Length: 370
Image (cartoon, rainbow, N blue to C red; front, side):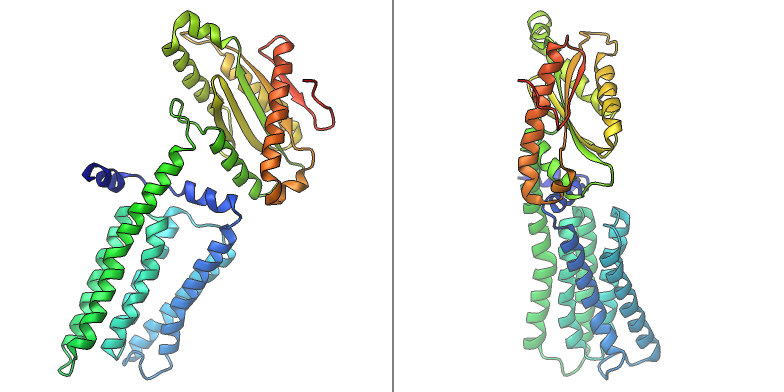
């Protein structure tokens, strides 16, 4: 258990899995809207407090509350109207939220009400739990704990403070802020790691077939631009069985790893690469039709480039979407993936029959001869 906890603590922040999940389920806009609503809620209390008796006593304090309200509304608009923020911008948003909640609670004229308001730090804690790593979460917990303690001290300084009213609030706040988020993040990390492992080919580190299907769904969910199609390229190494028989399976594994790296070297960052099994790979990308032949040729040439040990070539089959408009509908994604994969695989066998080390493109209007 200690080793597992250490791995969790040291694991680098990787939001790609979660963001891809949101994209593939068409949830990104909904999540952004929900976070924007949470930011707008953070603006409500300080905004109202500016004009009420329970707000800050001093004029400076009211100006601070007004700034918090305006800043939180600005963040709400950023989430509603902007793209998903980078990790740095996301961290700034988290810090803003923590500061805004803490300062607004500390400026409360009623210390007990301010202590009760500190439970709002659960909102930023939830955000840190799912969208940031353990170190950022630890910083949030430390700050939140100091805030609760400072608010509790304010209450205790009141000669009429009631322990039966205050102690439960402190306990609930600390449990919600300190106890729950780390446990939730650790369990979420375990689930995510197991899920990611089930999508990865252990030899090459590339996606497997299931991972390819999931990432293709995410790619499709983003929609196609004008004059774009989705292309599936199936790559099969030529005479790979002879490599294993002649040089051994260790050499065969080396060839597979090298092939994955060479294919990846000629792909753009948005393309999806997977090892389907054995000596077969697949690439999915969104691009203009005129760019498909060039991409396939770059892949073929990269694989066939000279190698110090066991040079190989590959046959490539390409299939493209026949009706890009339908790909914007999530219900078509699985059917689209299977159709593309089948046609690309059949085209790959056509390339082998044409002499290997070649590319065959299956146009949607031309049925492929099995």
